[in-house]
Image (cartoon, rainbow, N blue to C red; front, side, top):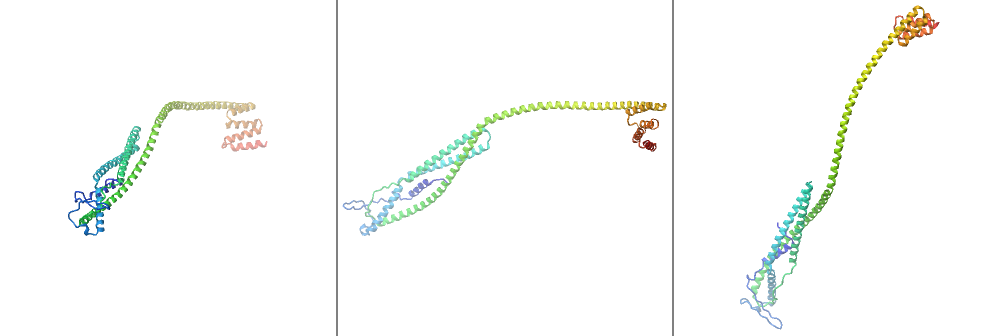
Length: 393
């Protein structure tokens, strides 16, 4: 449906009213005559009909007045109707074109907003911002042109109709012709009234569409406000972009330096670990060697001690057999210093103290050491008796 506003609807109503009237060339011209008080004026009367003097003057005059009123309405409406129809048609065409431009601009703005919201390239954002501003400017210009056309239609609607035609006083005329003509005029006016009601219905529909157009313009204004916010955000981001790029470059430079330093530290750590493994290997090897040396020394010392012990033990036996008991005691004690765990030395020294030197306390002590070192000795019972005997002396 073509969009028109209330002014266009009024123009359409005028056109419908104009289409119905009786054209001057379709009906014969009437020339009226009447008499004024204190003077007279005359006009040609129709040649056919009933003389006015034979009718009711009041009825006749009323019929003439109704006829004149209807004719004046139709003649006034007929004047200038063609020019008004052409002007209205041209204005409607311009309004339709402007509404199409507004719709196109609205679609373009919506498309540019979708593209700007989905694009992340700063150059594309700047280009879309310029295109969006151009589309918004075109939409505003189209809206201004449409408002100007609506104002012209309102002014055209508000112009009062030109009331032309000379005042006519009823004169003589055929009553039958007037009555028939009045009936035809009433029928035409009834048709015009019907068309007028149709146009009024169309005007109500147009008002609803105008309200919808107002809501659309409000939505477009809201979208324009959102677009301005998006532009401001984009502009701020573009202003911050150089500083962010500088920060990113500095961060990347510091990261490269840290990576180089970390690589150097890792190389040093690997070298230190290699050296540490090498030293640990040498240390373990040295520990094994030291253990072997200590074991060898211990074995050598043990061999030496055993040899010294045996030598002192044998010397003690020799001195005891010769009767040199103190010398035998000395050699036995030297043997015990080399090996305090030698049971045989303790046994010989205990016998020496018990039987030869008569030192029973020392004898009992060495007997006990002997039993401790050899608890299962074959003569253990006999030794216990010697201990008991030594302790009682």
